[in-house]
Image (cartoon, rainbow, N blue to C red):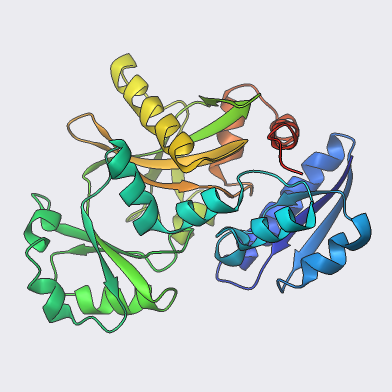
Length: 316
């Protein structure tokens, strides 16, 4: 099959995207596909790549921004180009953490307590919010993050509220909206959801233990900066809870073919969904390839399944 791997972009995740694109291209070539790796630096580039029926199948490895927020997916849908993963509406909802968490709450999926803050809101206004005490909770910690970003870009974890203003400024560098959320003490987990003929299932649960601080950008993409326990040593009961929450998050958004669900496992043994990634990383340190390997699935075979099940989704 002719496959064009789309990677690069122009946002803060560009370098990671290029690495994902190179890894995906090599693996799909190893599966016998005719692969072109395309560094997409502007949105308009896709029209020249796929005009007049050229380009074949599009495998999306563009992380964050318009590569993951539904913009690229909508353009490909309108052009009639088959592509990997979820459609534009699921991507748009997943990228917007306020919207996705509102949907999850409505569906009965546990998420952190939080408030959305727009650029221009003062720290004093947030401090005077009646919801802040419940967000601080027993831990006394806060998580501040952009509403629409990935790879932990612009995220801060605070002890108390003294540095809230600085944390908001950092988040607003990447998005005019930010989330101020409760910190969930416990364990960092991630679950890759894959579909076969439209039926989702979970690959082995991964537990992440960063060597320093929290699981930030450096911990994600620096070899040796984090320890990954696959599968996570969970009791059967807790494991079922984690899988159930992951599958519900995936299906609630209307995701297709595959996704990666990030969670915190609270000290009470209940999972809390943080976000769903519709275009997860595919680098040498990325989580999806690790989960596939733990299930006995080679990286190339996993990508083949993504392509096949994306084509079966009924899209062009």
